[in-house]
Length: 114
Length: 110
Image 1 (cartoon, rainbow over the protein chains, first blue to last red):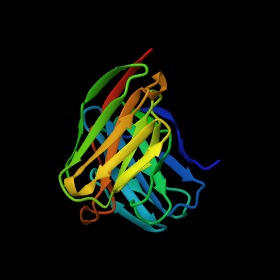
Image 2: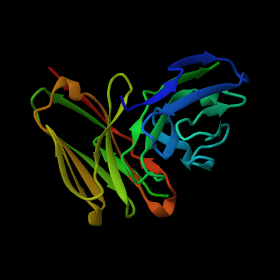
Image 3: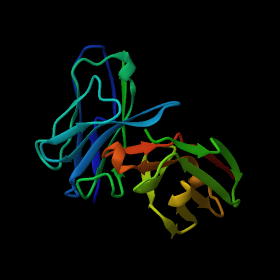
């Protein structure tokens, strides 16, 4: 089944403890991206990648890192999480190396930083 | 950057009713997508519609790019249509990213 898989789905952790949210897609998509969703602010893009080893900042990249060593994986890294990073996170992908294609979203990861 | 506004913010429907959701954007766009976020939080792509009209079952969408708006029609609404509907636009000049509207929260009552 074609899908975008995020792990974990839920995580409660403490300030400063490094964490990684994984994202994997099995559709051979070139474009991948991360969003966060907050009440009243909607969905905002954190980082995106047009292909392997090509990443770029979105609208809210502060406090996050990403890497794209393989086409299928695009992990989101919080080196020193803080409470303002408590949010619902989504990974998305699309076929070509551009967002100008239908986007496929993972099921989301709910992070709580205490 | 480009601004995307959706209206109404909230909509309550009786099952079987029809409705129209609107998405206005402040600049020209290269594409527009409609998504449904169900009560479990999942985001489902409904339409990829840079211009023209598309239909998918009881849902249809129309984008008039020259006038900078898109409409999503829900006909014969069902309780499973409940959730939040987002439009998102891509403007090449703004970078390789989508800009989302604030969403329309729809509740369909049985």
